[in-house]
Length: 219
Image (cartoon, rainbow, N blue to C red; front, side):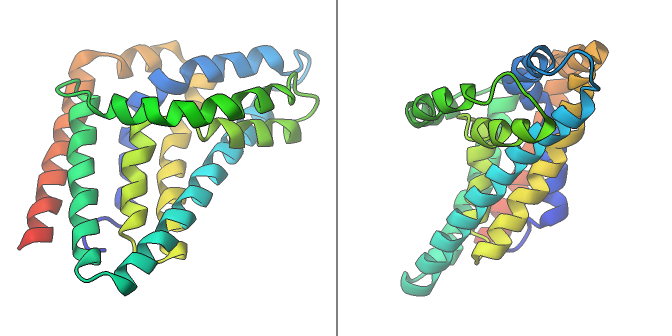
């Protein structure tokens, strides 16, 4: 897939931290409450986020495999999937900038599946060890999120299960710094990312990149 590579997936995950704080900030704060008070919080935070990123990687592998089958048997499928992934990135930029919030409709569809998984996550609370935060994070990785869904279209167009998984792994690693810092109680970062000017700037940069990818796909 031309245009979107592992580095760009990482950078978009990093830029998408503004959305992650809004979606997962409350969950991250809750982790401190369900972790042992007499032990460092960082191992639990890392374990939770590793589980979350593993869920992204698995989803990327699945969608990459589906895209590979489609490209092998459907004419022009590879071209169409690349175009769709670029368009989804543009919609994501609109979503982050609050210019258009249609991706929330996709999130509502995903919430039906997640409502069945959420009770399972509660069985791992409270955390008895950092290891118990791993499956908890893996389950919460399936939380309905327009950012993740948009990124999965890149995996769909990646050409293989391995590349799809690697793209989502890179994206997940990009979201990691923001959530770790937020989990450490850096309220200044949360307030900065929630600032409207910051959101608009990030969204504008992503929109420009998406438009570039769209033109690259159709030329």
